Image (tube, rainbow, N blue to C red):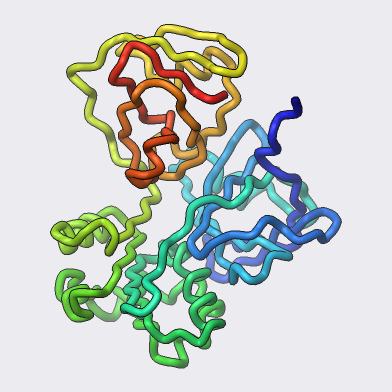
Length: 316
């Protein structure tokens, strides 16, 4: 039986730099076929040279499946993916691109509050473009940046309509998030992506809200505390029957890598979903920030997972 295709080959149609330090890539099928459909706020993995896999939010309207657009900020102190994109990737290059995954469940009638810091606006651009195309006005974007915003050219209709509030922190203070989310009433749904300080303030402001009314996106995975009760268990790859003991001092991910398991990894910290895998027996101990409770009944983010039983059987 052939293995399912995990990513396709795309060509870099164009690269521009809307702001210094931000590269915007337009990716398309090599033969101009339609690309797999996606939901607002979806992510894709870029498979770069040197075995690098990095996850980025799609920034174009989901109705436009002839191309994928991503925006990448150069992080000189990062793990190398953004530096490769900024310094080596060129128009005409071919790269592996995953099928889009995840997305954001927008409130159909209640207010959608998007709160972004800098390049953290990227997961919200596709959502706003979709809402504008559908002539829906039940959203607002509060966008903080140090200087001019990086992707404002993509949101001009929303800006002209007054549904985008810009805060240049070189000239004005950032908004108080707790006051901001309270302003929109008890039915609003809030989304946030930005630097850690903004995310911490957002989490505190909506701590008492039900999960169905809040959504957070992180650039950097938070550090996970070690599990004092961790114990050895056996991981089994169901399709090959291979198995190996996972020791407390060696992570599940490191063990899978030793086994040569076919798992894509990007963030390594449970925030991007690149390594989501179906599980058959466990149960796993979920430590990610990606899966819903319903998804956890069948899937696991293996880069941060552990196991509550003696065996973790994965459907790979």
